[in-house]
Image 1: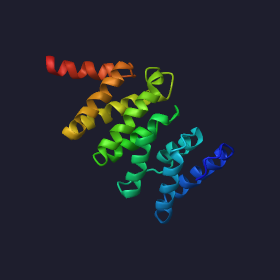
Image 2: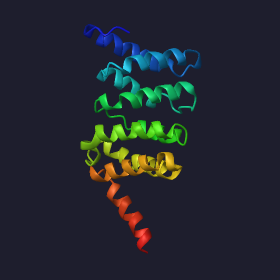
Image 3: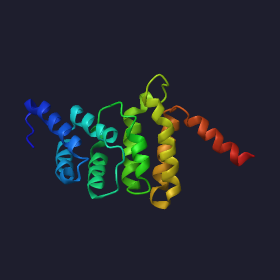
Image 4: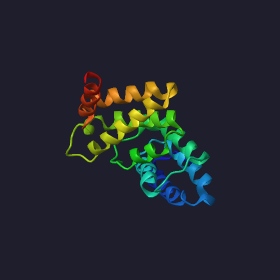
Length: 178
C-alpha cells in the first residue's frame, strides 16, 4: 500500500471496500490484511471505515481474522481520531471473554480519545460510558490477566467524569457499607 498523500481518498475507498467484503468469509483474510496495512497510515477516513466495521458486521466472531484486526486496532488506537463510534463498545463487549487483553487496550484507547465527550450527556459518545463501565467490570472479573486493565479503565472513566461512572461507583460503595 503506497504512502503517497495524494492517495488518501483511494486508501479510504479501499478501506470501505474491505469492510464491506469482510462479512464474506471467502474475502475476510484479504480484507483483514488490507485493513491492517491501512491502519498504519493513521488517516481519519480509514479509521471511519474500520470503526464502521463494528456497525456493519452485526456479530463479530472470535476467529483468527477478528483477532488479527483487533490486534492492529489496539496497536494503532493511540493515533485514531475522535469518531462517533458508539456501536464499537457493545461489539467489543460481545467478544469477551475472548481477546480480553486486546479489547482492554482498545477500550483504554477509546476512553482517551473520547475523554472530553464522555462526560457530556448531549453527545452520543456519553451513551457509550455505561457500556465502557460494563466492559471495565467484565475485564476486572475475568481474572488476574485483565483485572488491572478493568480497574484502570474504570478509574479513567471516573477521572474523566464519564456519564454514569460516578453513580456506578457510589452504588458499589454502598453495597460494601450496607
